[in-house]
Image (cartoon, rainbow, N blue to C red; front, side, top):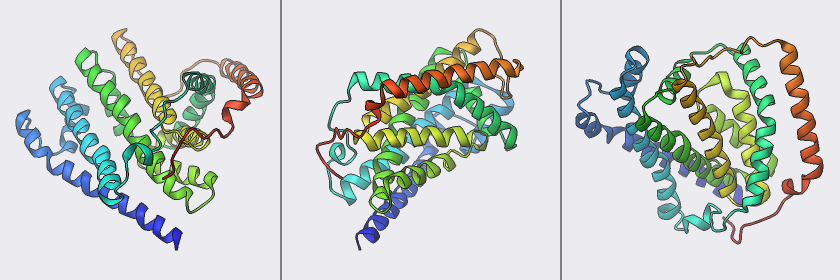
Length: 297
């Protein structure tokens, strides 16, 4: 009976999320008029950005996406917890306690040491999966813009709103609900599958799944959502600023693996794995369950 209630609650949240996304989409009409755009949908605007690469279209698309994120995702989270569950948001999402700065630092170092492996997996993923790269091209046209105000919009959308909203949704609600029905490890995997599929970017599906599993595991062992939120924000912002700096310096962003010799990658990987082994050996305590929450959902 308990599992049925949790499943019904999860389905209710997904229904609320879909409803709020529809509301956000309908509410974009005044925004189209305010920007005086010739487009009638986000898809038309996306096509224009890919074809014409106009700054005004980028600003509109980013502003509309920020609005969708606030109303559709964060709004759905608020409505579900406060209206349907009638619970405090901070306690339900495990946001009541401040995270340990030292522990955040160690988690970030682990991510940094893992980056060479993630990069190689990404290149292999791209070689194996040949999909429509329009979303990837759009993302890079937006993030790769040289205008500082567009950088600010990208920082807000891809950094803070994506990191906060996605972690509240996937880890704070979905993973917690699934974990009440199955083993925590399966809850992390199932949530990461949903997280990965919902991004609709198949060329990065494997590394995105692995990173999502890492965020899910960090939430599981800490019971503090601030850790995956901060890690997600920093991870996204690193990519935003890297691509911005690359654009300002005049270097093209390549989507295919670079042409460095295979020996270069192998040496880099071996060094990375040695450092990861030493890290896990000497700092394994940070990956042990340390419940930092004073409440349950």
